[in-house]
Length: 416
Ligand SMILES: [Zn+2]
Image (tube, rainbow, N blue to C red; front, side):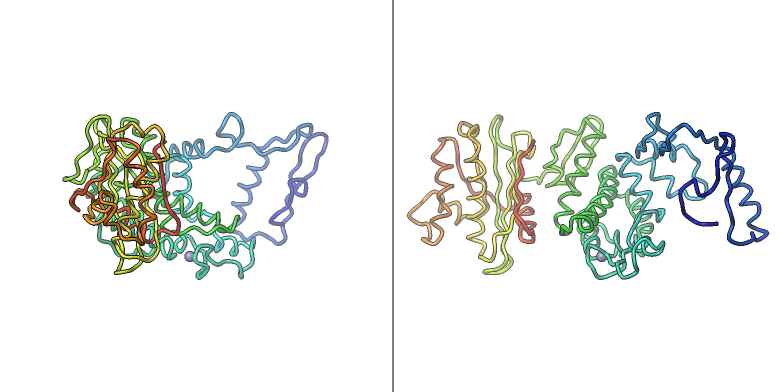
């Protein structure tokens, strides 16, 4: 039988009735006869109508159009004989599209380059992984062993404080992930993160293939944190924390549904008084001087994150990085006219940097340009201040500063 061709090559019309005529290239083996008969009777059970134009119809949706929601609904209600792992995918609280992708990944039904070259759609010379360009793009390579993907999994597994051995396959990883859920404080966040990693690896891969855009693993990790937060908020509307909270504290979230939504706060950090804001900032340098980053987060009296930044600042010593962190926070606040009359305190754990903000005469001359924004911040309102805090009260800002060292581009976000 010819393997491909339009329907009209496999039959003809006779008195307004379609007659199937599938010609075989060779005689059937005995074991194929039953199969072919079953196939013929399936074909003959279809009534074709000559007056109607051909179209593709998805019969599980009244509109006739494919949707991943109806697909996952059908698969969920089919009894998945034989593979409990695959059928378990449909029970997770994540959007249907994400479940569908996970199902395609775990059942080996994703059109990776290895698959496309095996079935002859692309040549064998083009089967390399679009992310690392070093290996054949199989599902297990793309989602587990590719250096980009591996560093994403490492970051998450370490963030949650788990020990792991690099799994052989994505299926092994999923089995391990399900197992570990028993010891994770908030398993909803843990599972959503898994689906979200698959989602963003596939998205990064498609960007690399179709628009030749390169995405780094740290950019994907950022996206995974936001995506996970977004899904949690969609599935658990009682969750009162902002997406930025998920970004800063995803590994410490302990409950995300019901009446309570708890993010573990660093114990020594205290929120500002009602109606005011607090901006914790920090600078971090890997050496004296060395590669440096700055970070900070603005929170309200409920501890909700209102804004954050995390960025690389080049090679310098930590004193300069600390000043730059205060400067960046001032710059962000100065841009918001509505904050001119709000009580705001910037907290830094650098005694030097804080004392320089108060005593212009002591400022090292080479840092002078950095203080312009700081002076504007302090002079625009009498209830604006910059104070020193102990390192233990500044741990979230410290994380963002350390993250900033390795970023390829600056990250600044305001809530909503
Ligand atoms: Zn790769």
